[in-house]
Image (spheres, rainbow, N blue to C red):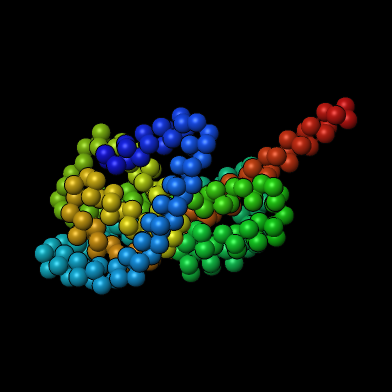
Length: 265
């Protein structure tokens, strides 16, 4: 939590600096972010060995008591992802002239890519091609899709909350109503730090669990099934980008049509 507060204050302070200094710092932040993404890549190469060891220790300590929370974790994540998917389709049908089934058919290759790569950034090139194919304005999707790949993390936010609650239940820790507000706030902030790379969300999840003083070795057991969760997370994240861009494109087209009609009148 202290790290999150410091990061927010650092961002605010950076925005208050003069133009030249702010630009240099922004460049430095980008370079440091790239460095840490490479560091995460290296960690993920050896992560399976560490996760396997942690799983062995955790299962030996907690035994069959983990099966119930693990089942609830998977069902809860899948249910939340499905609810978000339905919400996207309702928004698409309500505010645009596109039908959900047609939209899913036209964008099908993108969802195959997100499930295969579990990376918003790796799927970005396919997303841009699909946006062009379904005739979205290039001036719009060339901005919203790259931005969304970095910042739109609906699926990741769901996963973070699920990992935290799974760890708490397995460890026998209860949260009160006030704690859930803190959980939501910190989760929303941390979800922006996953960076759109495969497995990045799991690293953030471990940081998230540790921030609430929960046993990180329990959360690490999720690493054994994280790929199954991450396929849905990435798909939901990228689907939010595509649906949001489609909604904006329809809104802009309607606004232009109204402006033209008023001009003719």
